[in-house]
Image 1 (cartoon, helix red, strand yellow):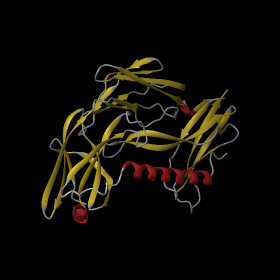
Image 2 (cartoon, helix red, strand yellow):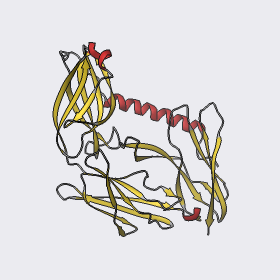
Image 3 (cartoon, one colour):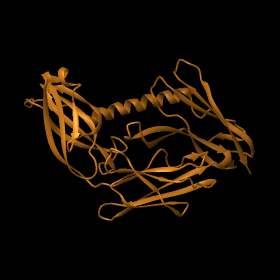
Length: 332
């Protein structure tokens, strides 16, 4: 049985792209016109970025900031590829965040990791007519703790017992339990990202539902905690009546690719609408970003041998192609 239709996926992709476009416009405001344009480079504004992206509460965890730089509009074509961002005299980890222009003013923004909590000197430079022009601003990074699960989402099903990773920033006295049993994480600082560590716990899941609790304390010693649950299908086995979320693919563009999961219909059936889940991942540049994935609901209907087939359509003009098949046994 198909878990969702091509039309449904297309509509959802169009809606999410439209929403992201609206958020992007809202998140990168255009320069304020009607005031005197800058005569040189200035750092006009610095804003926190919630770890899960725009639209989340202002007090949400944050690792990155948008640094806005304003400069004369007639410099724009010459300087747009010459920007650099420094933090306390060292090259920062950053990516371009967009920009705008009008009324004699141009503006560029940068998505920047400012480092561990404390006072920072932020410097943006550009090259104009062969000269390097500097703008500086002091800013204090708040000791706002972040302790988050990486790579997975609450309610996900696993088909192999794998290590779990957690992002740790400005958090002390971390404690992690798996099914009520304390486990000691291995901590590894992220090279070049002062203040960020990745905590890893060894595989320790049991067949069926597992509960994870991870907690820590902020700079003042106030504790906070999070919980998550996972279903571990050890040896690709489920029990009659079990419900799982099978992770496969995620929203891309309105042209594709599109992803499909077909259950055998006798032993395994679709359990409802496809769910969109957000996970935090560490990319090639070691930046932590949010990533959307699909969770396909599957229900173990009857005892026996069955499975799911995974198909992908790389473009809406093409046919679905088999990616892989996964055999699953349902026990009474």
